[in-house]
Amino acid sequence: MCTGKCSKVIAIPLYILAGVSIICNIIAFFPGWKTNYAEEEREGKGDRITDEVKYMGGFIGGGLMCLIPAIHIHLTSSNGCCANRCGMFLSIGFAAAGVVGALYSLATSALVLANGPVCLFLAPGETVPNWGRPFMNNSGNYLGDSELWKTCKEPEDVVQFNIGLFATLLVAASLELVLCGIQMVNGLFGCICGTCGGKEEM
Image (cartoon, rainbow, N blue to C red):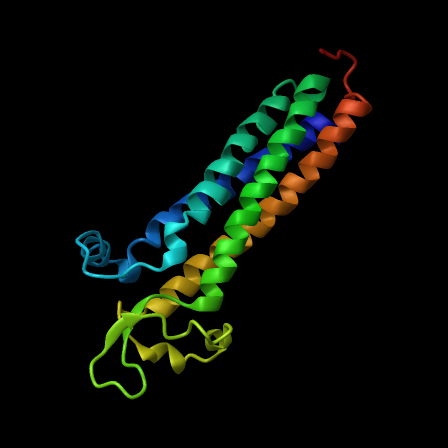
């Protein structure tokens, strides 16, 4: 497969993964599929949204920082095997930006899975439930113990909600990282060795 066609193969899944990352990050602002928690936080009633959600790792990192490289990478394949060397060279830089974005999304997703969500829970020794992060010092051990998930009273099923979204973001970011890494190598080959077409533009 020539470098131009390889770029097209890489760009298309990057579009999908970037879209998935953006959607997951937006949905994460509405735990339990409800908007009232975001509204309560906006009104200053305390933390209702998990901190890492606000870092926008999926929207900025896995989303925009991978979507823009995907567009350029796709453009380098627009002429098929005759993609030019300059375009392939630039795709290395764009792919590197995608790697940084994917790493950011990966880090924030791993962090929120390790620390758990913000929820209403009853802490040991207290009689009134408060909002906080009951799994903060759990080192992610809660992930494998569904009984512990009942610790969170509100939002409803927030632990499952967070695990589903951020596990998806984690997988998407990992795939983006691999694809952008491959494109960096592909771009290098296309720049140094030339493309496989009979015609080549500079």
